[in-house]
Length: 539
Image 1 (spheres, rainbow, N blue to C red):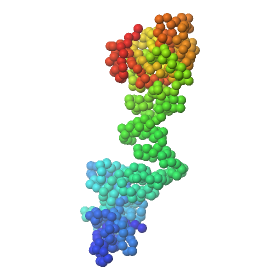
Image 2: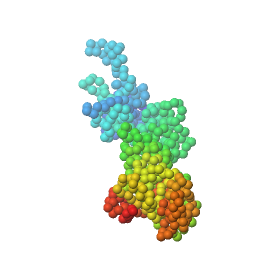
Image 3: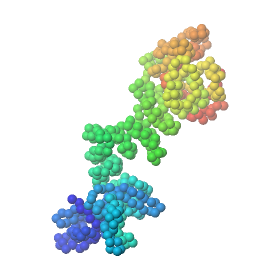
Image 4: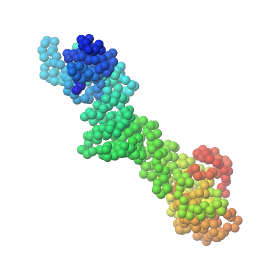
């Protein structure tokens, strides 16, 4: 059993067995032989009034150490350079040694005992230590409620005619590396010590399953509604154990969050970012952590047509979504190579090669191009709305009913519709995007041999036959106009207004080039396009 005492001094031992023996003298009058090898600290650190611990074995002192205690800062005045901390350990024998815990009964100058009220005022049911700025290790600014560790020395103050308990070598508990201190905190009944302990087990100290189990067991007993906060450590795997911890614990440090599943890690990090400003959390570090989580998310769902799960996007604060790097991660686009092929992809690919089809074409405004470059690609109307992305809708009616598809043309652009679009929009700059033809043989791509809005989309079809129908020798639209292939190259559909509709999105990486009038090239560059530019004039 460990003894606690106040060090007085060392005396010369009369023990003739070994010249390295000394006599340990304590302020309470005890005198014990001690071998120099049993003194774990430097003798220069031992000064009169120092709190020490040791064991007694066969009338000898063993394993003498400086007493190092855990406490909480009551107050600290930086202007004056001092403050006060209170011990957390509830040990009556230790607490009785503190001047502030129970003052001795003092007589007045006239020799009379103080009144009962004054005696009661002297009883302070806590052990306090004086904290001077010179004893603080590290650069942290102390504040009320900080958990700290320190050595203690009792010093007599002649000017006040009383003893004072002083903290020495004080540091924050979160910076403590002494494993014995951490272990003692883990076994304490004080619940406020358990979070730092859990943190230490996963960071500063070499983590073992046994230590994690002890920390989890302690946190599991935090005051609450009586129910266990998570499953016992033995029932869950090492990689997923902290998923069942309360969010408050999981937010304690990035190191702890590394043990989480990706989904849980993402959820906690987003919650911390939302509170970063109000709780003075490291915003930049949390954003880096969020970026890492997003980069590790699966790119596609089972259907193969989503880049991010829609449920994630609403959770993230709007100001984060405005950061370009995060917009690219959140609203990324699956490239055409990663999309699943349509059932008749082989036939469509051969048809495209035979016809010499070089690409799909989509026209839009320079204002919309800015959003396309910022987002990383083209989005359907439904996708733009779900992501709350700003855009100007060229076709406001979308009578075809395919709001989750993007309208394109094959090897040209729909000059008839562009003429009507120019009358409705005031922009002075139109741009044409040339897109890889690979989208033609991908799943969910739709084809229409005439204007897709005809009969509210009744002519829109899917599959190889629908694509072939766009190149029929003669095509009639719903107005009765007949289109033939006279004077039309093999790579272009029979009807000028024939459409190809690409599902959900087109990656900016799949844009071959962007065309505009030469005078508008700088506007295209300013919009964010870094690829090939072609001089192109709309009729």
